Image (cartoon, rainbow, N blue to C red; front, side):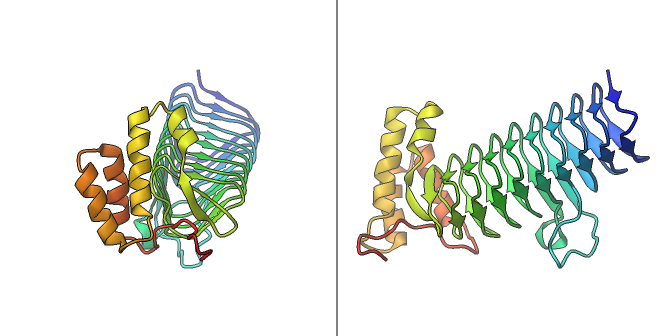
Length: 266
């Protein structure tokens, strides 16, 4: 049964699914669509052309779908799509896309956005992603499935965060982080593989071993990156996880691939 508090403001045109709950003093814009079972606690603002998937939950003082902070934004008709079963905690902000990024910001299913985290314009966030308290991803960032971005971390615009990757708290990430990788530091460096995450997600010992071997080959100091990629492909062309890393490295990007700190201190 749909339950709307009498102090909530719902503009004409808004679409609410079955069993939606809207708490006190919420404001829902006329282009908003809330899926079945969505719950808005008190003082939530959802505006713009925003879709919130079924059974998602948004906590007080979140600001969802309002115009992006990109100074180039000129009011174009853009969109924010949020998947199913997404938990959005207090003071989270999410912005729609812009004409410079396909007019769409998208968030997958089963994600958790902790207090005061931020998803900027034109981001693409996968499934089962976690942004811890005050984590910030700038415009055009892509975040793969099961990635975790630690508290107070900041990700530079256009950076890619690979699937199952882990960004440590208070890190500044300026370059692309490979799938399964772990990054940490004020100006983050690649610190190895996210072994704890892989074990928690029941990756086999063989899969982890192959990823570790491929990692050592890719980030060795001998030869060029292209030569090292070719060596990894020669050994692991049939390994899905390793080839996911290879494809990520090969993909065209405006940002370089994040590197480990070299043994000479560079």
